[in-house]
Amino acid sequence: MRLCDTDIERYLDEGVISLTPRPDNSKINGATIDVRLGNSFRVFREHSAPFIDVSGPKEEVAAQLDLVMSDEIIIGEGEAFYLHPGVLALATTLESVKLPANVIGWLDGRSSLARLGLMVHVTAHRIDPGWEGKIVLEFYNSGKLPLALRPNMVIGALSFEILSGPAARPYTSREDAKYKHQQSAVASRINQD
Image 1 (spheres, rainbow, N blue to C red):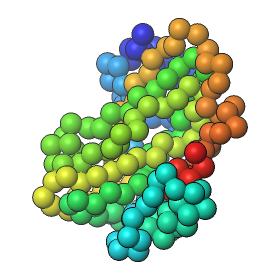
Image 2 (spheres, rainbow, N blue to C red; image 1 turned 90 degrees about the horizontal axis):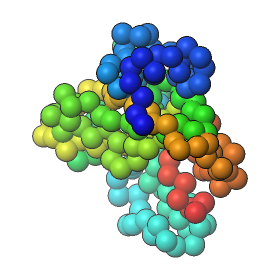
Image 3 (cartoon, helix red, strand yellow; image 1 turned 90 degrees about the vertical axis):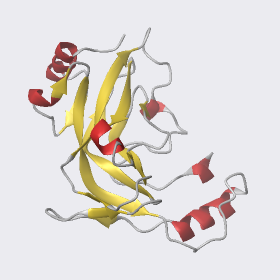
Image 4 (cartoon, rainbow, N blue to C red; image 1 turned 120 degrees about the vertical axis):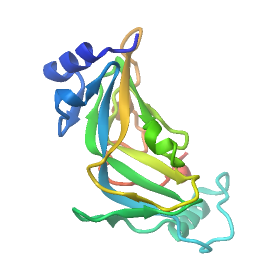
């Protein structure tokens, strides 16, 4: 069952679901709550590796990832991150999200941004039960012009579903959870699979 606006507001008020900083109630719509863009970004360095062998030995994959990912880029207040056509970049939500073991979240991009070619989450839009941290966004500009993205702009919306029961293995309790408590644009950790 997907939560409606009154249940989202109640779950936030009761601390069942947490978004920090908490958006005000005007950001809660029929079945979603708006989330904003944070200031942490990462991009891929061009031509720094011939390929990434995602199924290769862990040490080699880690070395390839280190070659292709930039250091964290922090965008200051009033500044913009320019996402050029055909470029994939990582960013975060401004809000840190905490879900209980019986709630799953879903991140959707904004239609108005999609109509300009911005994909907010290339594939990973599920927020697992027990998740805690900022959501990393996988931006891709499929449009024809660069897009100026500014911290604090509304970038997407979260919806929530109640599971049939609490998950036996919520995200933050799993030893193999690679992105626990992330607060920045963390690069791929596929080498930890």
